[in-house]
Length: 237
Image (cartoon, rainbow, N blue to C red; front, side, top):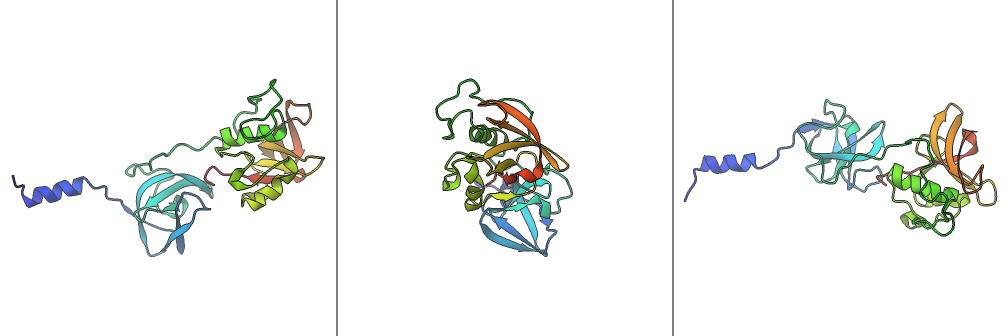
């Protein structure tokens, strides 16, 4: 049985998602193999180009925008640099497969550590239970959305006083600027110390921690921000 040519063409068009073109707002825009600023650059657009978005997802935060656009070339660009006319996901563009909301940080200030009262032995992240490193490892996995453990990115992170060196080797951002959800790190003391940044208050940070003010117990402190380095993990790295 034969079908009219017009019917065949109409069926083909209606079964194909046509991505709308959108201009970019920068002179050049790198398109990466994953929705992250650490992704490999596989294509570059110039300002004269209009990109076509096939789907959108979450990724590395760029100036307050954590949406990334997958283009018809099969790579990802930060939505911050694309003029879509909306702040958020486009209604007529689907979300990419596997898209889930990013972890909420910093989260409630509470002792949600899984192994409180059951200290001794190693946790699933290969750290001693009820230690500062174990508490922070749990927070990174459950709140920041990073699958952190004591061989993260192939680097041995070890005691808290080697986390700054490990971060640099693993190309994880580390600086003196705190923000909620970052990890506060110091080399002070025999083994150093790490804590979870719950809030920033001017020249001070409020941290949550384990095994500092009380042995193998949870605590919070308001500390001058200059006392720590700050390691900024990302769920997209």
